[in-house]
Structure formats: C-alpha cells, structure tokens
Image (cartoon, rainbow, N blue to C red; front, side):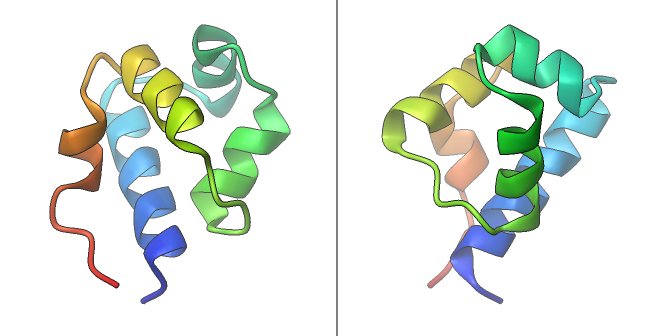
Length: 71
C-alpha cells in the first residue's frame, strides 16, 4: 500500500479512537476539514509541520503516527 494511504489510514484510526470528527480535528489542528479528508484518503502528502499539527491535535506524537509505515 502507498505510504500516503497508510498514513491517512493511521490518522483516521487515531482520530476515530479519539472520538473526533474530521471537522473537529481540523479545527484543533488549525487546518481545513477538506485537507484532513484528503490526507486521510492518501491524496495529499502532508508536510512535517502539518504532521506535527495533526499529532498535537490528536494528543500523540508524529513518531507514534509514523511507526510501522513502510515504503
């Protein structure tokens, strides 16, 4: 599976476990909801800064989100 799709699936899994909607995550991370949707579908390649924002909003670390993803 493409690493962007793996990352998106991981973010979606953590978001749902946290009980957040895409809109709530976007608001907490200071991003647009449609951007979160694209990231979760693997159609956008988030920057390191965006990954940090998403991780902070999910009360986790970027390394925990990236752990186990493969190229």
